[in-house]
Amino acid sequence: MHSPRFSPAADRNKQAILDMLRTVLPPQGLALEIASGTGQHVAWFAQHLPQWTWQPSDATAEGFADIEAHMADLNNVHKPQVLDVMQTRWLDADSRFDAIYCANMLHISPWQTTTALMQGSAAQLVPGGVLLTYGPYLEDALVTAEGNSSFDASLRAQNPAWGIRRLEDVIQVAAQSGLRLAQRHAMPANNLLLVWQRATH
Ligand SMILES: C[S@@+](CC[C@H](N)C(=O)[O-])C[C@H]1O[C@@H](n2cnc3c(N)ncnc32)[C@H](O)[C@@H]1O
Image (cartoon, rainbow, N blue to C red; front, side):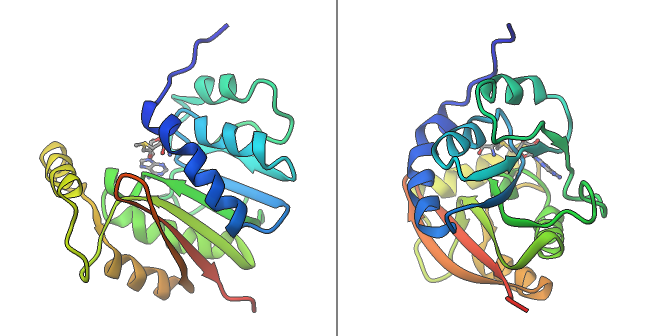
């Protein structure tokens, strides 16, 4: 039996995110997770939101054995699929999702992935559907928390194309794709859960 990779951070924040998903999501639907990583988030959400069906994904298939191991007893999770947001074609181009969830990807990838996430999500959400992004952001009106400033510096030292995104910049590229920031929720450890909504028509 494969012993799956375990992310302590994903374990710490999964309950706070689930609590917020319960208030944000409709009672049932089909959700796509982008950048599933170890699969701990999607496993927790699928277990506790059984009326939702989940499609995990990541840019490569490298971690899929981990995702599948976390999913072992769940029947409302599809097999993980390769989905690199930078590709113009996402999964089956005809698939439509009621919700798309993406945690901790935008700062650990080049800025272009933010644009690609917004464009691809707008194309594959049902009208009125929501994209949820979770992670740290820089906000012009707020003093950046010490933890986020040093995290941003360490990301940029690892890869100059990485870094915590300015929320105002993300709002702009989202709007260009037809997604508006509908909700902003402050989360533990200086993270935000953001709800981006596609227009209903
Ligand atoms: C820090 S991990 C976050 C994993 C998980 N979402 C979590 O919060 O624990 C970053 C993830 O982003 C994924 N990623 C990076 N670039 C991507 C891209 N272009 N398309 C899809 N996923 C990408 C990585 O493969 C990795 O799984």
